[in-house]
Length: 281
Image (cartoon, rainbow, N blue to C red; front, side):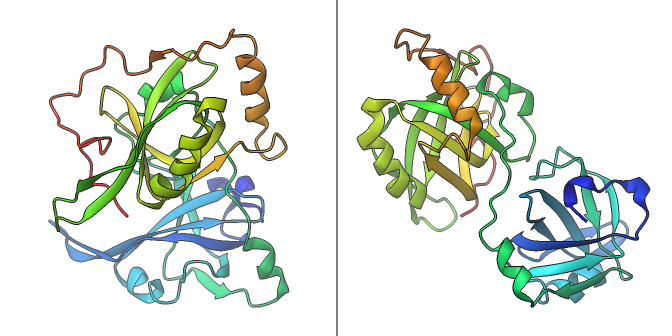
């Protein structure tokens, strides 16, 4: 069953075949009802559609070692519920509920190979619409033109004083707004170096899985699962063609109003695009 076709009214008669695209660390919690453990897992199917699940208590203990990032599984007898988009990092209206009755088996036949190179579908957010996503954990996809690529720099991580490489970009799109994007670690040193060389040509980039924060009102920041495609093909990213066609009508203009203009940082301080929230690498 394609993930995209799932809804809570189908009952539990469906089975999906999906790759574990991301698995979080096991965490513990304590509240009035007691304590326990939990972790998040993100699945992706052959259509590039993703869905997330949070496993709790005994179910988390049962599946944490069994579910391995990169492996393909059949998941059946699971439930669905509306996703809490304040906390979900995946763009899907629903999330899986995995319980003791859920059956998860590894797919070991040749069909598993079909899912190894599947990339998530792009759900592009216009730069002008980014302020609507402040306060959400959801990771967004953005396609824009690089107006400027700054130099490679570094900051010290507060927790252990280690050096984190960073580079800032300025992007704009056909919404007529611009935004600062902070690249971290390998994305800053590798793709960032490529963009530094190409910036005079105003390359198009497709950013997948970036987080909105309130640095300078609104900005974007990469996380450990973020990807960048430089000058994507129009076949892979149709939005790139539309963006190039729009830019051809702008007379070479690259100085667009910042999408966070007039927005305050709500009293929080941010470290170069970290946006007051903890950055994970």
